Amino acid sequence: MAKTTQKKASLEFEQNLSTVTSFLETLFKPDERISELACDLIDNSIWHKSLDYQTRESWSRSRRVVCKVEYGIKGNNIRFVVTSLPTNKVPPGQLYRQKYCKRGEMENRFKEQQLELFSDRTSTHTFAGNQLRLWFCSLAYVLMNALRSQCLAKTELKNSQVGTIRTKLLKLGALITISSRRTLIAITSSSPVKHIFAAAYRCLKMLSNTA
Image 1: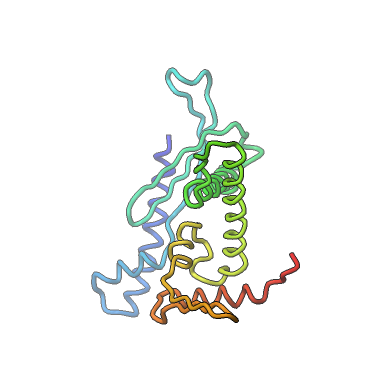
Image 2 (image 1 turned 90 degrees about the vertical axis):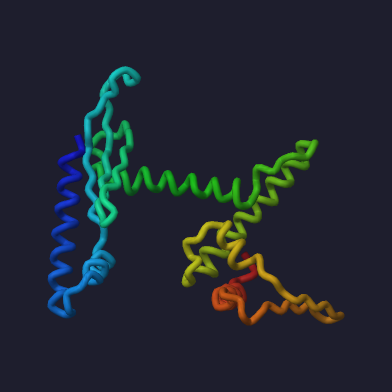
């Protein structure tokens, strides 16, 4: 049922690839690397289509299925989403991008707190103790999300998950010197993320402390 859409996506990609390749051949000497360069310069072709589908036994009636076909240098990548939303209210492309993808992104946030901030570690013997652990994890997520959105927005970690930020930015080796006046944290100058750390620190200094 989706073969026609797959064919359209593949034809569109091949046409775009041929156009870019022909243009590059007018600028450079023809060789094998031109095709690779052309593939890097064009996006995959993405098509959406609504299908009316019913299984042989498990479904009591036919349902709307939104098909997403993505064709690129690695071939077809096809996905199907079953929905009760009618086509006249939500077109297939809008349903996939604005409904289904955002729902998946929301589930990623749950996964961050559970797997990367360990909110499932409720192994104490009292309800109050487990509740306190969950509060700590919730507070940690609020702080990490604020760090990501307000201090890492212009860095390469702007879209990173909490686990990546913890591993790359916060789990650093340092020399700590404590005196009567201050605590000095000296991070090695060869740290590969020192520019990100410095950028986050500058943003933290500019944030209001009245929130």
